[in-house]
Image (cartoon, rainbow, N blue to C red; front, side, top):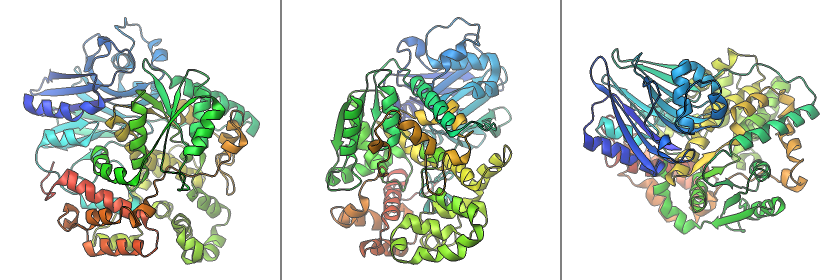
Length: 622
């Protein structure tokens, strides 16, 4: 993992030192800058900060050029099949880094063939001196974020937001539409962000830029697997077992120590069970104390004991954690309504004491149908006319009303437009509450969902639940969970890998019939059957706890004054757009007993982010 930056702006040495410094936490091992002249005049500058993982020698230093001198690249991520790719090339390699493999493959085959060949997590910027084109790409599942600003005849790209703001000068400004989307979804899907003019490249897309013509085009490159698995469920379990083992084996590739982030659930336990057969690993877990039902320390400790692997843990307390929250949001660079960012912070800090690379169990709920919202889609498919009149009224009653996730799911019933129904299922605030918070600004949530639905429609006709699972994989997962996973782990110069999202493995999973993955009654079907080969049933079938901090409880008690102070400060830049009285009413509803912990946390992170990124005014443009 590394930090990358590129621009066609002519920046002075002082500014270039600043942009490099803003990325140094991502790559403390070495830094580099290259200025490449353009034929039409001007130059393109590429910068890189390196976290050395493969080929620790100078042969892995970046920016890197191809042997022929045509291509120049800055690369962030890991290419797990790069040794296989070398067999396609007839060049003499200087070292063993995957960056060298990538730049030589670009020189031999060009951008699109290279992207289709890669199996890894990546974001890179590569300049072709012959065509005078800059190519910028993000991996198929968006594990590595990539931002850009296209303004006044120039393009700037980076792994993080702060360097592109630094390069373009001026104070950033809220994008009202991005804010409206955030209130509805708890994050802002690519290509939008909360900042005017700052874009985030979508997962499995690449950008082509011609500096001479100031012409920019963004294209989708991933080829979906349209083949369907035709074997029995037992054959599917056998094939999955083999492919998952191969994926974990690929992602253990490293010249530095590797660990695993171990929760109490099945996903990280399954990855750990396969990884420890290949090499000695240490497991790391974060908890909040046994008095909280969501604390997974005891479960993770038992999993480690069963697998015979070393286990280290940290218990985070609410007093120290609330002090860390502004730093966490500053590192993520975007507000998120996901309380697990706080747990991830403590976990990454713990793991970095020993290792530079960790495997995670992230990314299995979406392709395997692990969330309850998929059950609503199954229900709509099986009983589309019955579901609406019979079940939707339950959303406002008793236990259903108190269970926010269930109420949200039931409220979706009868919404026939697929994109709007998916948007309602994801909703943080419903349309009425969002309108009260941000009057007069509508959130085009359905448009972003329809974009991915249209891409899916080009490949095959899928059941509704499977379409939601695919949208979630490329949108929610990429721009929420994986985004904060990258930003927080890299704040500690720690590389977090996701074997469950291995490209070859995902192609197999998505080839399985939906009934092998998820039904109205069962989730992760083949996944759990395969896990039973390695793990006791008590681990495989533990109730799902999630990765949640007890924010609702803490915000009403030990954090109450701090949350109120951060949330209701009338000088906060967010109140240039938000209705403060609506925010205060939401806070009062939460204190009175209605569990609005997700909503309050989202608003609190928005307040902290606004103060951090926008300062006192939030005016100006990037």
